[in-house]
Amino acid sequence: MTATYDMYRRITALPKGDWLFSTLFGRKAPYFRTIKMRVRSVEPHRAELMLPKRKAVHNHIGTVHAIAVCNGLEAAMGLLAEATVPDDARWLPKGMDVRYLAKSTTDLVCTATTTPEDWAQAPDVPVTVRATRADGTVVVEGTIHLWVTPKS
Image (cartoon, rainbow, N blue to C red; front, side, top):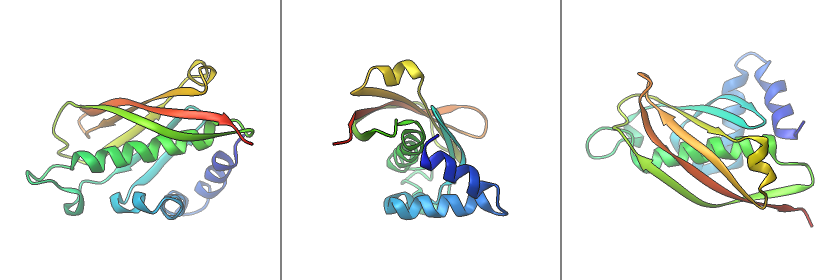
């Protein structure tokens, strides 16, 4: 069990633990604070967070800006990577391929998923990412590519 996954489980067991974990994660990577995400779940091979639709992340047509959505997807990927990467390895994102499929008109759920087979492809590990509206419509989907190498 990785340290991030263990910390997530311990903190979210506390009253208001999901808020506390989300705040602490936002401090680790300050640009994630801009979207005011709420972490919903973290486990090996899966992470999920909620990205609220609010004025600060709107674009010119009043929907969630595409880059804010990508920020949410990258945060979900980072949580997944921290919960999944072996203790003797490190990871770095090396690219993101996304498709914008629909307008982001509600709060969004950003998910990142992998399989053990994906991690067996290291050093190149593909992480599937998806942002979904409240009605279930997928608004953005794609892959974030990780570079996973042994710690030196």
